Image 1 (cartoon, rainbow, N blue to C red):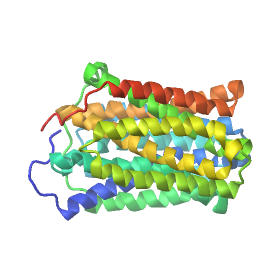
Image 2: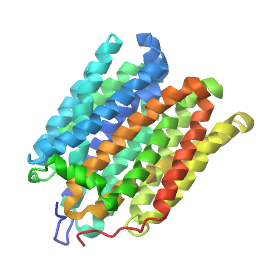
Image 3: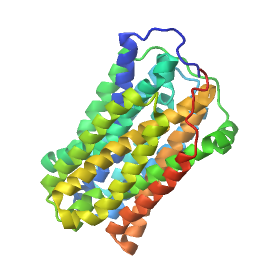
Length: 395
């Protein structure tokens, strides 16, 4: 992969970047929407929240496999047409989810969507660097993967809000319509970008073992697992443990999301200069927020819970963007295969976090899930602190 070599970045280039950001928002919102709807979906399909949580776990793991397979099988295809098709498949998956009448139909629809999800995310990981010049890659990546961050922090509360007011099926109908519209927009905004040469699976294995990337992969694994271990069960935690009403939970999660969205804009302006500082600070704030919310919520009330949710939302948004930018800064010509490994690891970590939560929930209780997640954050922080801030490998 080579970055754009000329010195200009046109309005259409930035429009393409924004379109890809919206697309990434939709695909990750599709993945995580059940988190904010566990109770509703479970009640409707007569399944416990822990089993509905598997709709996130299985989706994430299949998406991880799809990311690795697609980069070897689909990397030669032109990007614009491929992304359009994947968005249409994602729309179909969301529509089938919306009309599913039982748990099996729901899971089949989720599996179809997860395949398109993994392939899409693997392909867009390097597009920012192919559209803008090198010194703008951090900003372009922040915008594109800001959609991922926004989905993680605002997609879930937005899904919850729609579900509370119009039913969980309406949430997935909205996703289906949005996916179709964005797929059409990709046709007119994203420039023609040819596929890369074939990438062998052995190349992915060697990159996954490269010491240049192993430490940041470890940090990614720990931080993402920590976040989703805690976040997957935030709705039942707020409702059952803290006694917060369903309508107020929707507001709290929306504030969580807005904080993450604001943090993403701030991160985009400074990440090219202060990447390591942003990542380290965000890990510290995320760790403290997750740890404290497990203890002070019952004692100090909703206002403190809100403050901690805002801090958590802001920090995790910056973590997501920083990790992806670090990979692109380090990878250079290997950006596509390295990014696909990162995407696979990211999605596997989402699934592992959700699964760990479901496993330890009956053993140690929901409050202790947040303590365990904070420990994961600490180890991720230790792994990052001793790393050197990367420079663009192709600069």
